[in-house]
Image: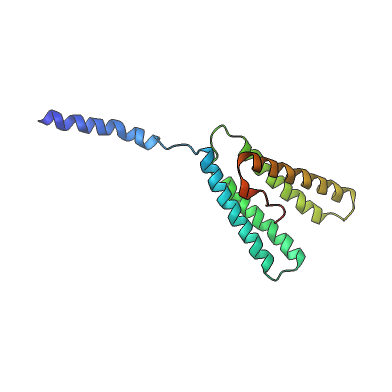
Length: 145
């Protein structure tokens, strides 16, 4: 009878390490679902911000802060292994926001301002294209919000 008690014990010990290491990697569908949820929250936050009584300058600057906070949340979403698009998309978002900040920091109609406007447009267009191609439907309005 003792032999029967030993066999299940060794079986359980053999399975335990595999169960601990069996943490599954995120799937594309899981990434899309989580990223879309973050982007939907971002859009709601920016819309609430627009409803508050702010000057246009305050609104723009605060929206940058909100976008940067949500970029940090998006960077925290686990990316499926071997997937390049999510990182490219987030980089394009971050680039567009950085260029939008440059637009405000440069003299209107200056060479620097024009360059920042063009770079912003490219970054935004790229971010939207990548979002659409990957299924991030809630993540295409970040720059216009």
